[in-house]
Image (cartoon, rainbow, N blue to C red):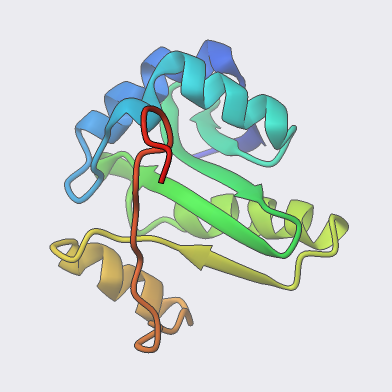
Length: 145
């Protein structure tokens, strides 16, 4: 199968979110609205990617960005019918190429604790879990503390 990797655009949002909804282990929330993803794509131009077939069928997607120090991947997903064909690796390579251009030396990925298949994928591909960190989160709006 011929697969092309290209930059994700906001026009891809409907198909990409449908893929994410169908992918076990991906948790969507208010940060994944069309407006929020569009803002992310504009803030990190050309870094997020999709994989499409020669017939323009969406096969995979990943959000990629950075904060100036570290890169971050979000919601890497490949259609179940096309897994284990290297599509995820090609998407990650696209992202790493863009992170390297921005001189970002390391990349992080966040997983839900319940996402065992995701953890297995990342470890199989050379990623190391961090046991020295925990993630804390708080809503920004409506709180002055």
